[in-house]
Length: 257
Ligand code: THU
Image 1 (cartoon, rainbow, N blue to C red):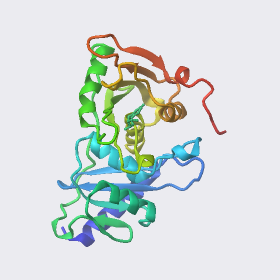
Image 2 (cartoon, helix red, strand yellow):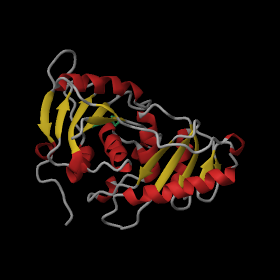
Image 3 (spheres, rainbow, N blue to C red):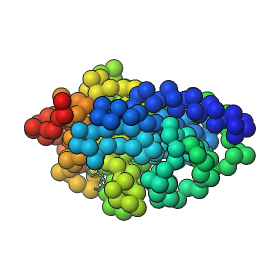
């Protein structure tokens, strides 16, 4: 495929994906599409938070989805806006080499695949019991990108229809651009058009901390989208998981009417 055709196709996709951005505060939707080596692609939208600095930028959202799905073979990135200094700084930290163009990045314009389907992030989440769910999250944690903390975290966000999507923590040399497993899954769900009203449960595992619970930032974002979400937390070995609900983990969480 010629770079020109791929660029046009990705532009069209980005325009569609942008409609899923969660931007109630700025009303300025933003999105990216990551093109993978086989032509499948990953969407990422901007997810704003009432606790404003917790806002997830679209590239961070899509990149962390790629890691959780074990696909870092990104060959091009298309943006709804222009590539700014913050995007450049983010990309530099990934140690991936791209040519920087105005509204897209490309690894090698001679090697671009035809654009195909969105990569599916969904897996079956019909667990016999919650212990099976946290065991699955434990396996997902193996995909975590945590070279700085060496503290891998994995989760599965389960929807009312029984499907799940994975999340892992993804670190960045600029620590402020690190994303936790829980917010990774949250951002993936929204990027693929699954709103908080259809989330049922979160299964969470961090084997380095058998008392582990979601951090404050994750509690806030989860509460903004699904305060009634059940959270099952791995307690290590064959111990039964501990259960809680997001609104009990962050009583009186901040909302912006
Ligand atoms: N982390 C999570 O993924 N979830 C949490 O709830 C707590 C912290 C990650 C972020 C970072 O990569 C590492 O664990 C240490 O903070």
